[in-house]
Length: 258
Image (tube, rainbow, N blue to C red; front, side, top):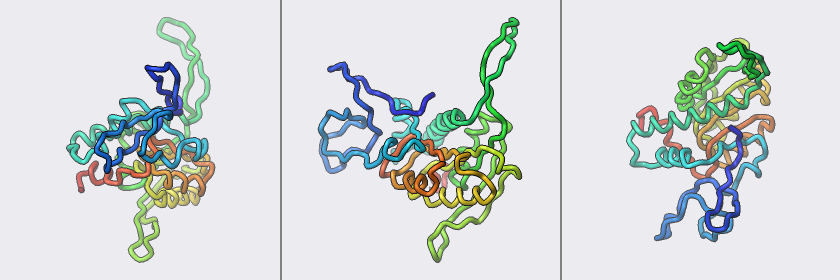
């Protein structure tokens, strides 16, 4: 599955227009505004201030389709039950994890089928691991294990210091050879980006090169993605949506602590 923005075919004109990311309707307007708008359609709703192109190739968006849009909608809806929230979150996490695995290196190989034929295929190179930023990042661990049963997963606990309000590392545990591995860093919501920046610094201190880090997230703000990329230009960020308003309630809803 390639990481690019899908094209939306116009039924009336037959021309193709780039699909914009889902954004909120203007709450002050009495009429409803479609979630996806063609670039040629006028609207008083402000457009998204940052896009995949403006943030560079390090930011990769899953192709937007109706399935992903529905999952995003259910997760954002305040009336969604916790059961439905967790179910839809797990589905979206699985999609992100699957695409994250596509970013890992692979090599060509030849196998023999049960009928004796030779099949030219590929296999992933060894030396990958996951790292979750606690606590919300732990919600993505099972999705990664469902795809890679034996993958090793490390953890980082980062919280804001009560006095300075700066991100502070309280706990970090990685595989001993993490510096040799490609790292799938898991954190579902990128708001300011400060927590992820601190986590990447910890990984760098343990010998991991930023170009070997793939950040898996579900939702990101333009500011969060931009802050991370400016600090670490070689890191890869994979997400489903870049929007000024991120569902920061995700961790509380997922773990039932809201």
